[in-house]
Amino acid sequence: MHDVVIIGGGPAGFTAALYSSRGMLDTFLIERLVPGGQMATTYMMENYPGFEEPISGPDLALRMEGQARKFGTKVIHDDVIELKLEGKVKTIRTTKTACESKVVILCMGASPRELGLPKEREFRGAGVSFCATCDGAFYKNKTVAVIGGGDTAAEDAIFLTRFCSKVFLIHRRNSLRAAKLLQEEVMNNPKIEIIWDTVVEEILGSFGVEGIKIRNLKTNDLSYLKLDGIFVAIGTVPNTELVRGVVELDENGYIITDENMATNIPGVFAAGDIRHKTLRQVITAASDGAIAAYMAEKYINENKW
Image (cartoon, rainbow, N blue to C red):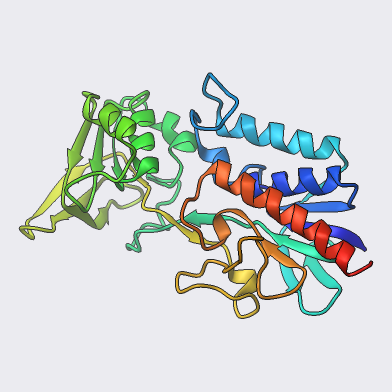
């Protein structure tokens, strides 16, 4: 029987683990892939407090994991396949093991949103990518397009100019939603060309991406771009499949919590990008994780385990 089981090893999960393990709670964290979640796909972070010089997402993720482990957090890499959250004792089953816990903190984060086009999944890894920092180096001296208009899309476009000869930034609106500083960088980069008021209609190619068909939303005119790859950066969808129908979700599938990160089930908390909130950033995920761990300890004490 663990005191706290945390599902997900992003900034919310590892901050929750740090706080709960420092509080002398038996803390067990399950992460299916590499530590960091979406943070691990961020090349450089300039807005996380305490670092005058930029730090890479993977580096910060490893530091968070190391700090949590230092205070006693046990970490395994596995897929959670079943959760039984009702009742005082929670049961967590993975592909390799099963365990019980007094508290569960859900930190599964969110995944990149897809365009929903034919060939999008088929060509993933063959010209379609959702992670510029992971795959950008494969496109040296090539032409690519980034789809989106927010911070991630702008950051991806800027990052890709390190390798690519030309980067198209395709956005369905006539202005970017990215931070002003990022917008200025995009506008002033000679390798980036913005295509406004436009959506991707089709991904072209036989065995990989060779180009795209695009449509202007104001004129309905169709045109074609010859490309070597596309990077999709149009937001995220919450990874809530495990708890759908069990934990209360909003209309977009995000977990509903109160300000204490508590869900509708006693002893179950949620933190980070997986929950309904205004701002999804590393720092807000970390804040959520700290609150969730504090409230988990309070819940355990109040229930006199």
